[in-house]
Image (cartoon, rainbow, N blue to C red; front, side, top):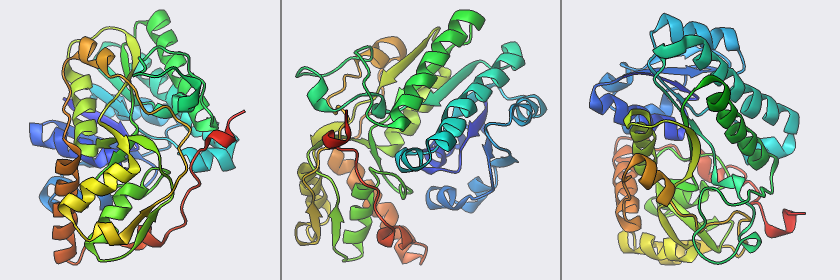
Length: 337
């Protein structure tokens, strides 16, 4: 495959590139600026050099069309977007990047015709409202979506537009809804704090996770592989799918971290705020339509994260600036109308 990844220098993009290169695929990253630091956390320099940078703004349709044509792109993964805090602070900018940028990607794929075989894009579990909005039990992909943030609304819009592009133009696409994704390179966003806690404990530093309650912890390598599987497995349609990892409390996450790093028991504290996004989401839909997806046990994912962080620390390459950065306020039930 010849894969263009918009926003590919981000956390999930780096792991997707890692998986694609391991398979022998070719990777182009379409992003505002060249910043391969997250790639270098999970790839040797020889592999980083195989990723081709294509400068461009995701809202620039002409630039997207040119990139797909010039590099004979056969598959597109669309990750570029602004997260919850930015969309809350500047909804118009959030809409421009998240909605108009996604429309530009679909228009570019439409212009490429049969050259592009599959488009997979990042939606989010933020399309769901708080857990109090739904009955008990795992929720399917098609329940009523009642997001409590602009970000979630923008993602709903993208899912709807994907359906219309299939209806009107026959463009098959897969939308994926990650939840709390953790692992090396996760340094931004509302749910980045569990990953930061792992890094802090490794360094012997205290860390307070600003939220509590239940969430769905998904190991980044599993999420990356799910994107890759969604590119290559037979599929026709334009659905959006829940992902599922380990659905546990944040306190349970800390217990799992203690299995790997016992000092976590005295270094990590947990808040009480339940994030207002439903956490018990069924992944039966994607497994039915696209086949089994990888699920790394929570302790095993934490252990691999610790090992990579430890190696980076030994090499003097472990960045700690994210541990001191201001924390994004979690979306709470009180934020909902």
